[in-house]
Image (tube, rainbow, N blue to C red):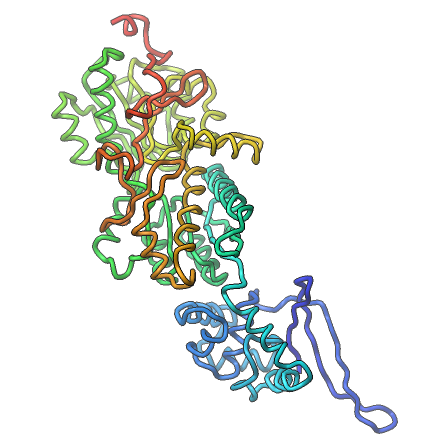
Length: 540
């Protein structure tokens, strides 16, 4: 027979035990140890499940042995059938037994698995001297109280959103380091399981979420993906709390409409519907202050076809028209590879007073800003989110000066935010951006507080209930998720209480730095006329 064994240095070995006949006629046993990883790309936990499954145990019995949920075991079984190319549990068990794709020792004792040769071998070991001690050690090793708490994240570490993924990974790592230095949660350390993904490709996102489920993470976090429904359904099927910052009205509405399915999914920020109205509010306030005199009372929207990038909604257009603005047009561009020269030509033909650009990728916005700055008009340019990523200033260079932009979840410049930014810079030798590094940092602290207040972090329903009821003040503002959308609240768009919400921050690039222009009480600078304005417009 043969099986796989994992040594203390985390190296896999195939162990083969065979009978041999000596020349004297006496029988002998030959044991061969070969360093070899499990086949089919199986993980340690999948090999445990396959071994117990091959013995004929049910999903409930497997779940009891490895201290997890039946749903998680079912997910493991699905992965095993796919990896082994089998249609049934019986087929998978037969492959495991025939090819020796089994593990020793397996979780629990040999009871119920004596039909397998490895089951008999483990029973013999258990019946030997010290079997009670060894059994207790195996039981303790399988107990969730001894393992670290795992936070799983599906992040873009390559491609156009790479810089954002690195921001989130670094922000989460800092929070985990701080919590572990303080003793962890209930004496258990936190670990970050990061799975790279292509946020534009649904198959890649699905594979990433399936990998996190296979790793049996205790919670999932992510930034944004462009297949929102798939991410929602995969997270709901796994069952662990899922914290994300997709700024998606669609996801918030799904949670409200199907609470039974999505009760453990939390959008830790407000949705994108507030961006458009916030744009109009900022224009009106800046005019009222006397800091800006628009060249024309018309607005141009430049958007992608992605759901969360469309700000020219009926509510936004109504707000604009009530304030005396006309709509010069809504121009759509691809999320990647936009022809910004054509967009700038449109701006020169329509000559709007202000432009809202909603592309979330910093490389794309930088491309627009460079193209616009080369042949500008007297339009105020207002963007959303993407300048929060440090990469934007690097790519846009001097063309970024004067750009106004906003985010619904940004890192404050108050003492709490500054302390985080300074600590992040010390650890990473670079400052953080103004959004997702702080989000990731806050998400880890939210989870840690929720875990600390429940008996068992694997009781996902209890953890989700604590997340829903908690109030937490982070570096990106206050988190209050106890609403039917399970989303963060926007100040001042949804509430006038900043102690329960995240400020809809408006920044301007001034002297190569991001300075907060609104809302009070977070203001740190006044609006400055962009350098591309003509002198007669500056003095108007």
